[in-house]
Image (tube, rainbow, N blue to C red; front, side):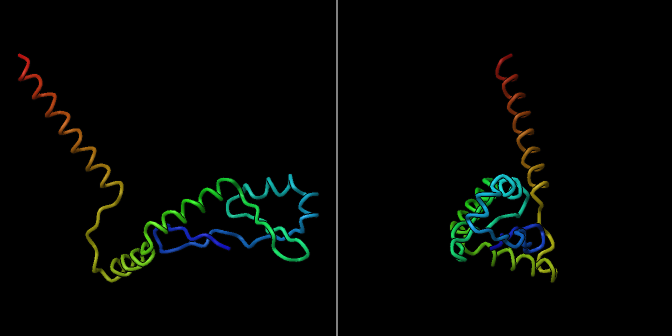
Amino acid sequence: MYAIMYTGELTTICMKPSKFFSITEARKNIFKIANEVQKSGHYYTLTENGRPKVVLMSADGFESWQETLEVMSEMPDLMDDIRRFEEDKRTGKVNDYITLEELTAEILKKENELSSNNRRGSKKANP
């Protein structure tokens, strides 16, 4: 089991290999396991009669998996789109793009201009 996380390069594997415990052993070590799964990428597979039965991970990790699955179901071609963009960027096909920070700054600038224009317009309307 692993998670795929986009970090500017296409993918990063961010789950560590599972640690296995029998359910009986896990019961004896539940507080240790609960603390360990809070670390990023850690999870445990609990077994019964030698077969995987349950996976324990942090609540934050579980929520992240749910969000990832939701996004991937809503945008099934997302990874292909990212791959194409990375290739286009690498080959110079795409070299004029705007970052999120630049987009945010541009939006704030336009909002400030509109707000400033609205204030000036209301002063003229109320002499």
